[in-house]
Length: 600
Image (cartoon, rainbow, N blue to C red; front, side, top):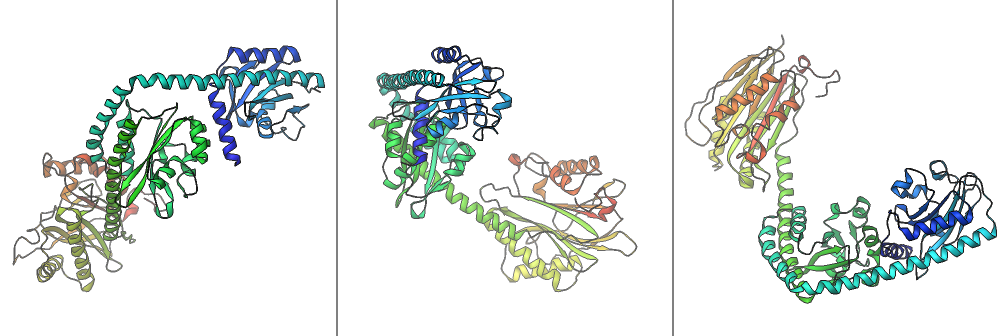
């Protein structure tokens, strides 16, 4: 048996005492007797847990420890007794190499110490009965013999409590069987709710949360676990965030040789029922330490069915013994079927979402940062299932003084529209670097290319050149195909909207487009956006533009990223009906309030 298994069984026995950091009259009397017989200022019945020692019996303990009845293990002399299984006798803790660095010397005044092991029926050391002096103390043989006799009597009392605790739990389990019929009916209704609720779970985390909410008031487990069965028989935990971090890390992924409830159910394809800690120790010894630490006493794990065999396991753990009937097991097995379907849907959604995110990132390349302007951008799709859409922004440095900026919107949502957007974006980039044209001529060339290639996506788009002038400032030239006109903020804070553009792309043939020109003084700010940023069926376009302009006027010294975040909230995410893109440009950003190092 491994050290971990032994320690796990010790913690199980400790749990079965029913004791905690609360005064127990019987063990307080043991402590008082030790204090009186050995004439020491402090005596304790100390039980050692995973990360603390606690005192169901104490006499003479000072504050704040007398109130809390526990200390961290860093202050524990008794853990040496537990680790070694032998008495610990210390004359002067300040010079004893075993304990001289223990903070209890200063915090609790532990100088002289004598501790005797407290055993359960199988000989496991649960803690110690200890005598403490605030001065150096040379313990006599008679004193240690008396302490050992008292420790033996205290151990007998602990063993009696463990036996009584187990007997009471068995009696309670039998009594609970009288309500079996009503319980089965309630859990059958659970399946009806599960068939509806799990149908709306789109991610693995949502599946876990849905199952947890479903079982509240019915089987009421302390923990709901979901695990995937991976290639090679490895198990990956899906519900790790419901565990303490160190346990989540420990069980994040493990091999088929590790015996756990989830591992057995997934590998064997049949339910694993562990009605009490004895069953846990016998069938899944590798999980026993975790059960003890989490104070679980029973578990049921059922396989998650897939087309080619189990795909994982659904596990429930309780803090009391629990043995489901055959009818209850059937309910849990049926629930696992619903969960498996939901997990498979969530997995497919996760794959689709990851692919969509990669696609969108590829289509929205990083913005350049030429010396004469500063840029910031945002994008958010309307479709939460696809996470991609037809909006895009782009910026291309053509030479040292000229930069082209584009913002566009292909009608529709989803992956198909995003693919059309990708074609349009690539074509416009190619036309931009092929040769210089007026923006209107560039749009006309683009429309001809779209028709020749047979692309049919309806879109709005704005193409602009921003050219730095030798004397300062910039010249903006642009042409719009039905796109929302840009907004300019002048250095004095004046907010203006540029002229509207011509017909959208794909709507009419033979359209003559117009190039506009506007000089921007040094320190101007240019805002390009799509209509999804500011418009819904209940929020008209003009109202949205007024809101955007108000944000610009009320935040004259704000950086681009701060402004971008404010503008993305004009239409809250739950109310957004269309994709939203935003491109912000500051000319001569040193005129704005940026740090000296140039960071945003």
